[in-house]
Amino acid sequence: MCNTVYQFKGPLTENYVLQQLRGQFDVEPRYYSDKNSEIDFILQFGTEIIPIEAKGGEDKSAPSFKKYVKDNHPEHALRYSKRGYSKDGEITNMPLYLARKTRELL
Image 1: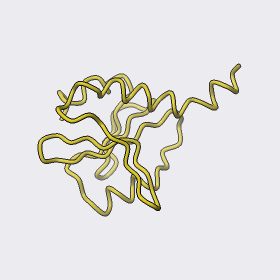
Image 2 (image 1 turned 135 degrees about the vertical axis):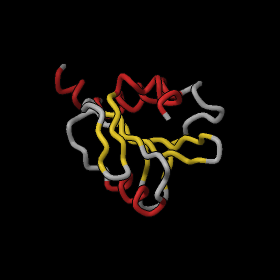
Image 3 (image 1 turned 45 degrees about the vertical axis):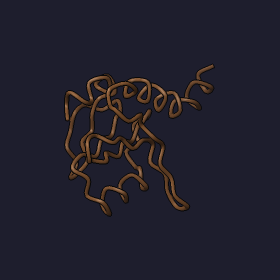
Image 4 (image 1 turned 90 degrees about the vertical axis):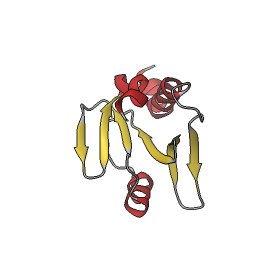
């Protein structure tokens, strides 16, 4: 059972974040991918596009997300994870439990 839960921790975390984000914004969150990369979610907030990464584990590596941020320099770039609040360059790490407060925190 533990291995099964661990195997699905990423998708379960993404689903949790999606459910928390839905209804907070005029445009529903979208998945983004091109031929070389993917971003868990893209939000539109007014004219701003906000990339979002949802992490279920301790691993902070998210090459596609980091490349998107580096190439596009969005005003906000959010990573939801089990870690506490921190600012890592242009990326803001938010604890998972704050996903339901995203719009208020922007």
